[in-house]
Image 1 (spheres, rainbow over the protein chains, first blue to last red):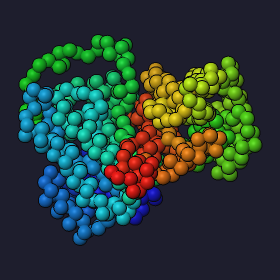
Image 2: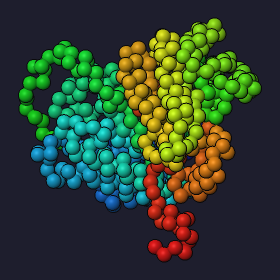
Image 3: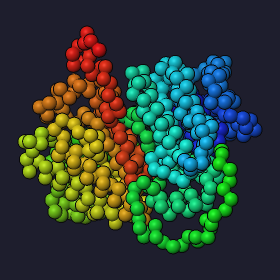
Length: 275
Length: 266
């Protein structure tokens, strides 16, 4: 198994795409350090499932938006698996809202989680990654490449995040550290529910995306796992778009097809925008 | 194995990236049809390698830039294989010529082999590819989106190829065919020995002012395999840049030091 003896640290690794990546890397032989915010029951379940695959799993609960939280993670690692070969920067936070509606505090909170925290986390992981000739993989969103309704805070922060990953690749190539990201189209996770009309996202993605369906976490995890392995050794500083072909073009026929009930999206109460 | 029971067709398979792709796809379980233009000895060596892996391999001589080349190829292919899952049109050249000296011959030959021949090969393969949810992996170059000394004929044709990629991806997804491309940087396929500026390009890349060096064909082949396999199922119509970081950034400081020496005052 290609990743036997390696350790992967995954932020936001106990649910959604992060957990799916954990499983892919476990399947390839890697042990895991999973950082999560506060849902201990959920984290315990993730740990149990991964340990059943014969992997060592260290769970660390932390608030990565604070430097103290990040420092505590790396202190705990020294008393645990004490090794990092693969860093998966996956934790994300989103405040939904149009430019006109999104508030400064929510904007800052989004950028703290999606840009500042990954930078500090990567920096703190550097000594380990240097030793290992490590790999960094970030998970991003198609919303950094095209605009979605109410998505400006997340989309723009993830664009900054992808550029951060590019700079990590640029600056740390000298240590043999390879950094890339995968940008996901709409994926069936909890996060879809943040949208004002989750059903609109689902119908649109199934109709507009060439793949003809919503993404599943494993669609993205397989790409992330590829970026963690030697097969991708010549890919440096890139963002791989895994989005089912939404960006490819416009099919007027599909677009104009009037088989979507307009009343389905009649104005209703906007849920309070938050994660 | 990821491609067990499947058949791949690779053009330009007697050497370079095509040969590495053929070997890689075979090692992932596929039987392989190899297409070559001139070097039957080299093609035979790749066939032997693949047969040694326990896979079926057949080499076909074809000039795909000829009007009926692709159709004739697929007729011959059909006599040896009854299915097609993966198409890798890797045939191409990397001739360089500055624009003020550019000849119509080189310009046309580049568009002919990198664009026209790819279209006709994909068209001729389409009926078989759509039977099994096929995948097409195109070979492009970072020279399609950035200028590299003398590379205009290839770069412009490959930019056309990347556009063709989006149209094929869009029109043929209904047939279950998934189309993507890889944009390579400089790959050590013998071109550097042929170019007059080859030694300078090699020196430049080996200094690693930008990027991590010169790719071997074997560095690109696993990415071709990834795009040919189910793991990449949600990547549709995209180009994966695999250039070892050459187009990643510009290190001003190293640049100046290498041009003017370590003592250059900054």
